[in-house]
Every structure is written in structure tokens, then in C-alpha cells.
Image (cartoon, rainbow, N blue to C red; front, side):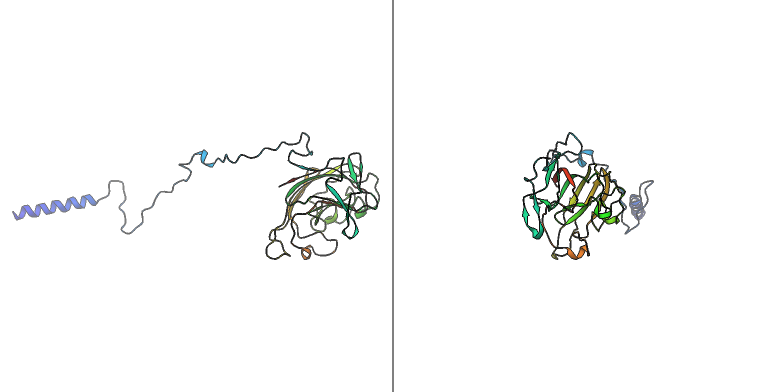
Length: 275
């Protein structure tokens, strides 16, 4: 009887030991070790529909029939006929009056004794298209030849100059953000030929300090279809003498201004898209 009991206990122990053995081909787990999960590719269970965004649908804007003309959502700042609906003139002492620039052959042109003109509307972020022409008869040199400028938000000047074979300081020639950034290339046409600027501008933001930028104004500029300023961060308002950073003051939306610098510069086909 005793032998039968001992034999039964031995059989039971063998069964328990066999049951604890891992199946063939499987490694025995080390006590206390964490089980390693296989690396899974998170895209295995995804479909292409999960990364396709359908709504809201992107609004459609009718482009212009002719490249350079205004698209359907643009504000026309000058159509070749009426200067007074969108522009006013600024004189000495900040006096504002009706524009005295003349309209000639579908373009508006500064005249001797007139002041700079600016838009009646104000803007923040925008895309601006403007075409301009310096006199065909060359007079003067350097900064005295076909000088004008496009001011963004009343403060930041993109220089206009007859820079066709006209040596001047590089950060003051056509396409320069005056005294801040020289253009990447000189894309000037001959005097008397129409040229264009296409400008994309992002207005600055300000923090608690009203004399520094939280994010600076930025601009990208194409001159005659070629990029000349690539998303540059403007240092501060334009100044003829001094450091731009010292002139920063908190501001909101501002006007587009066309400078009268003593040369008869013509402008046409001016439009803007608010961004």
C-alpha cells in the first residue's frame, strides 16, 4: 500500500513538472523579466481615408484672365481712371488733402510740388501688386535718378529707383528695404519701361513692451517676376539716418504710401488682397 502511495506522488510531481515546461520552440521566461512586445507599425491598421481632410472645403477665387491683373477677391486701389476714391495726399506738417497727382495714359504720376499719396484704407496682412515706371529720359545718378518708394503700413519702405546701370549703395537700390536689406538680384528694366512689384506682407505683433516686436514684420517681394526678398524680418521702421530698432513703436493696421521724392514716377494696376 505504501509503495502504491509513493508511486502516485511521483507520477503527480512529474505531471506538474511537465506542465510547467514551455512548448517546443518557445524560450522559457526568466522570472521577473518583462515580456517584450513586438514593435508595431502604427499605419498597419490605418486606411488612406483617415488622413484625408475634406471639410471645410477651400474657397474658390476666380483668377484674373491675364497674369498680373487683379483676381476676383482683390481690392482695386487704382484702375487707371479714378485716383480720389482710394487715395489722399499728405503734405508738410502732416496736412492731408485731395490728391494732386495727374492721370496720364491710364497711370497716375507725381508732379512737381505735390506730396506723397497714401491709401484711405488701412491694412494688416496682405498681398500687394503694383506697377511702376521711371522716366525714360535719364537725369541724375545714384539716388537722384527715378527715386520713389512703396511704404507698407506707413512705416516700411520698399525702394523704387532707376537701378538700370545706375550704381548706388546696395541697400538703397530698387527692391531694397531701404537701409535694411539689399535685393538678392538687380531685376531692373530699362528706364521708361513698366516694372512690377508683387509683395506678400505679414504685420508685426507686439507683447507687453510697446517698443519691441513679439514677431517682426515679414515680407517677400518679387520684382518683374523674380524673387528679390525672401521672407525677410524687418528690423524696424525705415529711417534715413539712425538705427531702425530704436524707432519701433506699437502700431495697428496702416496705409500703403507712394513716396514723392522729386522724380516723376508713374504707377498703374495697383491692387491688394487682404490675408
